[in-house]
Image 1 (cartoon, helix red, strand yellow):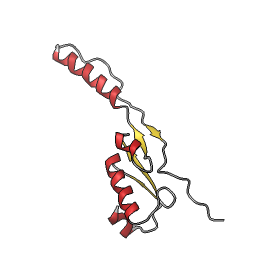
Image 2 (cartoon, rainbow, N blue to C red):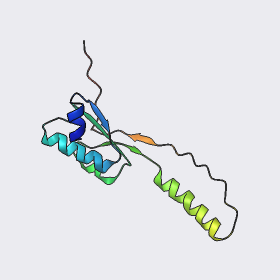
Image 3 (cartoon, rainbow, N blue to C red):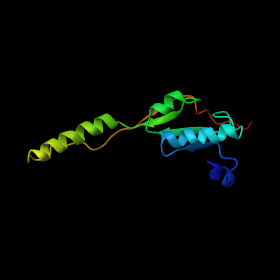
Image 4 (cartoon, rainbow, N blue to C red):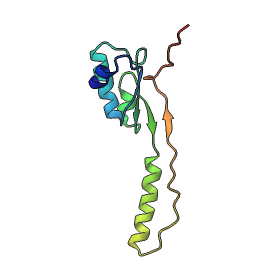
Length: 109
C-alpha cells in the first residue's frame, strides 16, 4: 500500500489479493490519516473472518470454498475407489459481500 501511494497518490480504490492484505492496507491508510472509505475504497478477497471484525468492516469477494471442497472430496473418493471420475461442473460463481470499506466515487460538478 505504501508503494502504491508513492506511485499513485491520487488512487481512490484498491482491490487486494486477500482480506489479510486488505487489512494491512487499511491499517497503513489509517496510520497516514487517510479515511476509508471516504478517501479510498478497499476491497479484499476470500471473505475471511477478519473482514467482519475490522474497522471499517471490509467489502470482499466470497468464493464458494465449501462447494469446491465438496466436489474435490467426491472426486478424490471416486479416484481412490478406482471409479471413473464423476462429471463435475468446475465453474464457480463468486459473490460480492458489501460492507463498509467502499463508497461511491465523488462526482465533480
